[in-house]
Image 1 (spheres, one colour):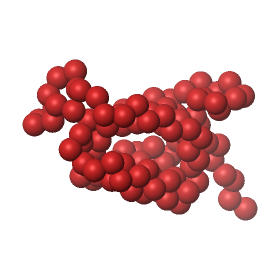
Image 2: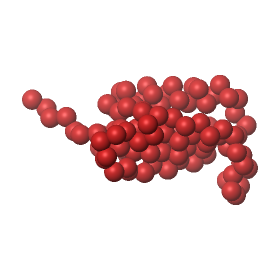
Image 3: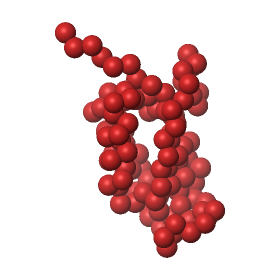
Length: 108
């Protein structure tokens, strides 16, 4: 019988292009939810920080929609998540941080 890999807690900051319509943010979140379910991950909380100016221009972008996500994912799936995010055309930047397990989900 196959043993399940223990999921780890992560935090991820995402910056989407500032010129996209707001409904595109919803489509991105739905794609991310679907991907997480497929890979045995769970999103616990999403903080929408909204549209903000970037600290410095990234390419031609000076504004972006900021999202902060708290989720659990088996460690073996993190590289796959990074690859999927790199293919996302409306994404400017992302950063994933491993969180320490404290018994309570981050962001709650």
